[in-house]
Length: 184
Image (cartoon, rainbow, N blue to C red; front, top):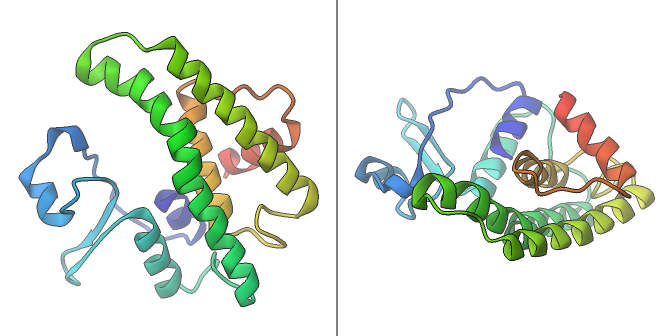
């Protein structure tokens, strides 16, 4: 989500890969939770952890392509959907797929649990139904313009899709919306 926002705002950045499972002391100095992402700018003394905090900071400090704009009711809907994707979609879909298809293979060297994967894919289908509904009733997920809600959804879907956890059958609207993001 942070990288999508930086791209939309045309902000240059250096990506540093961090493996949270390595639990490096240097990274805990930047982010005490040990979770990614974190934003640092040593020259300006900036250290920000958590994708929402980072995105809101960037959106507030870089004028180009605002992603949290509009009337307060519209901004509330953006925040609701960002929370939906960052929390609900992540818990139901992204986290279990990452656990089964990535962490188990890389860290634990064990096979994935097919039952967990099937349940995550079933949950993904329900989430895609909801996104289809949003796209059918609005220009973008939260309303009339692209917003942080679209970036949050695209980020979660991207991870799940990359790991093979998305079945696009019956979700042509969402597939077309997502393809637009992938092409950006």
